[in-house]
Image 1: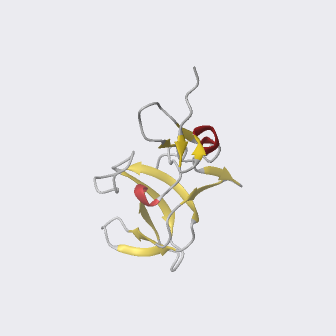
Image 2: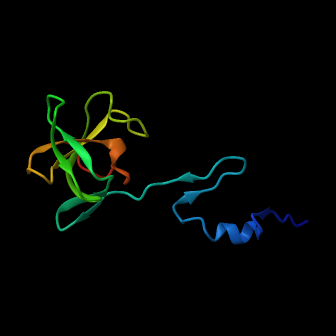
Image 3: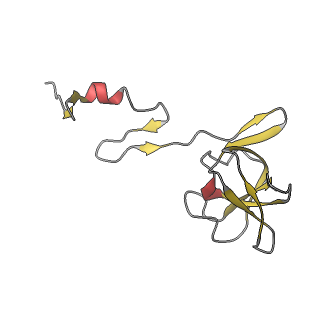
Length: 121
């Protein structure tokens, strides 16, 4: 028995050709996307992130901004709520801002990469 599904004029097999390898498809569910992890290059940890995003000081005030969509992060910490939701709702990453060189924290929800590989702070 063969089942053929047509999606917008193409077969399901052809539609799957457009699904990235990072996707997991489970019957009866939406496609779940697995983010590629942060990576270590030259002794520094790089992650894909939104830009621009605020960099917060320990007191919660904005101290700088990340302007690039790939940035260097030193470490990660489970700090307090309001990390932005997602798979790590209390996680924040420590980095140096682009405008003033100030060190501070970026919400995990502002980082596209999976941040588990980053060392703990």
